[in-house]
Image 1 (spheres, helix red, strand yellow):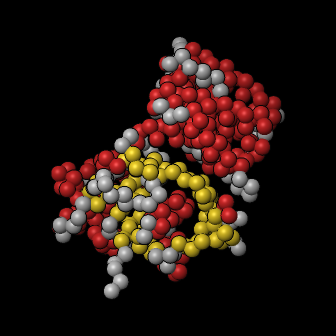
Image 2 (cartoon, one colour):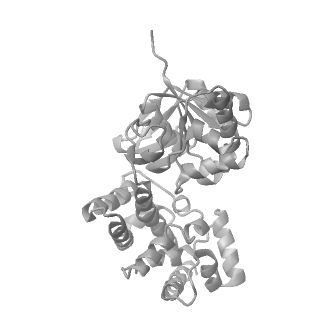
Image 3 (cartoon, one colour):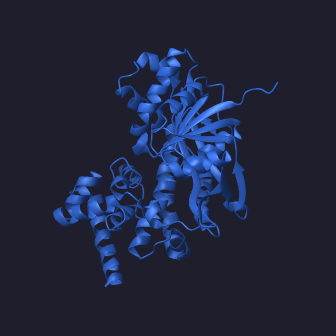
Length: 394
């Protein structure tokens, strides 16, 4: 008799959901149910029982991810609850800002599990946010439908760190997803239902998730948005064109190396390993045929210049340790000039600058004090970049 396949529920059938987490769940032997609100994707998945992916590093070879179904969690609430009720693992890839939106249906599904005395389940929020699963846990508790001790008995929320090159593309006039081979899914094993059981194959399980999160945020995310903001100043629209400019590629690598020095000092990663990590981060965007828009890489500039974020945090921590940050600081300055009219945060940022001036903008959004050396350096680079940009556009 055929044994029952393990069942996974995954929130979010976008590019990351299908191209990264959905594929990992499939490769780990799960029958996957995707919860989403996009009827076109849902019907496409259900029509063929899965979806296609294209492998960037293998001449865009097509692979079919089967054993997948999808449910519109707004229109078929009961179907979504039933899927959660019967699942062996739950994951998300909905963007961090949408965790609050999925909490109600997750809460109802977990309540159904409680009533049926189901086994405790791992819930992994695979979002680019520190303490991502912990944040989702708080969103569920805030609804008040499940008491904290009951939630503790029915669900574990291990935090994750996620990274993979996943790009929207088009094949024969239809939307498609291209993925790179290399990826990183790091899971906090201390918060798993059973730390001795690894629920997803090819993930890396650690007792110190924070250092991996900071390594990714301060090196990969910092480097990519740095290149995007500086590239925008020089008029580039595609990140690959920035990296084709050798001086800008060299400067991007130098900025990432400044962050890497910080990560080495804080966590003991070896310099060689971090050099390899930087090359991995840069090479993905220099793969022949890959085209990624600066509009995507550098979107949401207000978030990215926040006090706890990828540009300000490494610069502040390097300054506190009297370590070099002369390249990294330029990224903050360039971000203030990111004025894409298709990006809501860019529009908001430019309106704030017009109304309050750039000095107040720096203080307001970055938390960097006006009397600091760092502030004067940001202003210096901002004025220089502004001249470059104005000369180019006039």
